[in-house]
Image 1 (cartoon, each protein chain N blue to C red):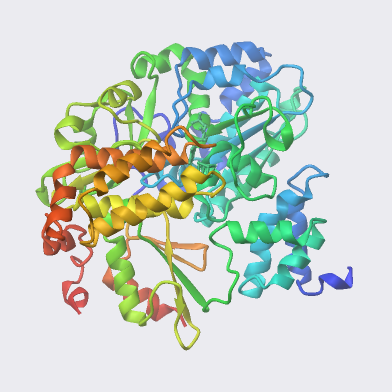
Image 2: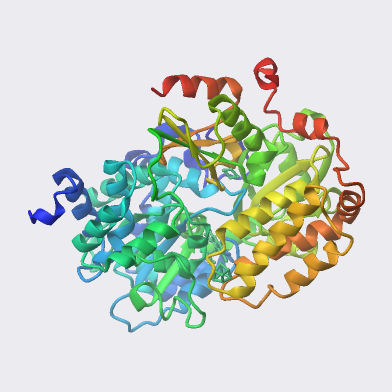
Length: 447
Length: 163
Ligand SMILES: Cc1cc2nc3c(=O)[nH]c(=O)nc-3n(C[C@H](O)[C@H](O)[C@H](O)COP(=O)(O)O)c2cc1C
Ligand code: SF4
Ligand code: FES
């Protein structure tokens, strides 16, 4: 199921052969490492590379959408020891694009990181890979060996004055290590607890040195931007929202998977590419940017285009591009309970509002779902979120609060029904059928 | 080789050395996550003494290594069955049967989350998003083998294969 559908493939050009197209020779055959060669041979300056990335309006694909070129320009020029770090921790529920990027085309991320290292003057880099995807970690290590053997990594790359080496660091199960400073702590061999900011990683990063950290998809886009030019890349999308983006579509669609589309593609088109609604059922709600993004009801999302600005205007976030599709068989209280449990479980515990607040959110949503809700619970939930948002070291507390607030805002009647009638508005049998689990062998499932 | 490290095989120590080499010479501690995984693979789980040996090998305080071992979800600080099954029950998976898959495994094995079958063969864990939501239901075997699209028949087949 390597590549299902795409409108304008860049990042996914290499995916068409599935697991048979990832290695160095395949990547070179489709023009890979040509940009690195060109930059080194033409002795492009660091500023020229950064200017090209700025022109592309490439915004960080990890969640926050910060302009990549601008981030690179914050790196101090003179510092003797600098790092480039790639964030493949990909633990944001609903997101599975970076896994496939490294699986089908690891060299585009590697080339992107080498070019970034050249632009910011780093000599060493790390790719932090999500714990649960061991086979992808192994493949990336193999790809690094290939790149090293071909002279793309190491001392004096391709005979130039530029040296850079890159290594993979394997995570071991902690969502919070996706937060960039938690990730850096983790590479240092510590608990992955986020740091106070400022200072930002560009000044105080890995081992206290200036560090550029970007998402996998951000790095993977770099060779394509350098190849077509920043302006052409920008024009694929829309102003301030350059290029194409991978969307991981999960939930109640006929063909869950990754889809690469230009920024600004209508949501309705993306849904159609994903095969439409499973069983022809009715769309109820969509979380458009990973579980931390506010949920949007069907009528709102159907009017959106998939880009940072349109989704923000509708009251949510494009985030990591994880599109979680829910149909009418979903009980919104139960759905929220799962998410609230996740944030409670994954809070690193160093800030009181997050540690305690995430526990409160889970327990109260849990009791509503289990028929023990109280009349004042919805106000209580909103109050708890007020005490969390913007009051902690990292954004996990906000990420825990957004789903709660948006689920209550848009689906209040379902919560009220639960509290009043002590049960779901959606018939449990309908919910059970909705997952499709018992479809394959219903006899076994009924046992 | 120093005798105090006998608890780990020469192969394991060799693998740890390869991890240490990825980091600057004065940052051996960076290899602690990988070293603990290597130790866990060899021992089946991570007793305190093993964690202390890993710490000493990397020149760090035992408590610093223990903090790491207790922070990340996939380290096992207690013995687990021969096959540790971790089922993702987060929302995107749940929409496509993640919770039902976990219920199905529970019923088949007669155990709940965080329990081990009496014969010591299976331990069941509840997992969070594994970055594979498009392949739901997903299940991880012994931390390293990801199984996708685990509907009743596929689960039956997997359980039968584990022996
Ligand atoms: C709780 C939390 C989890 C995060 N998880 C991820 C993640 O899994 N992958 C990722 O790339 N960024 C994640 N981020 C965002 C990173 O902190 C950071 O913004 C990103 O890696 C920067 O890269 P970009 O600018 O290329 O997006 C997370 C942030 C928070 C607060
Ligand atoms: S907000 Fe939560 S996850 Fe983030 S640092 Fe504070 S306690 Fe940890
Ligand atoms: S929610 Fe299960 S793998 Fe993402």
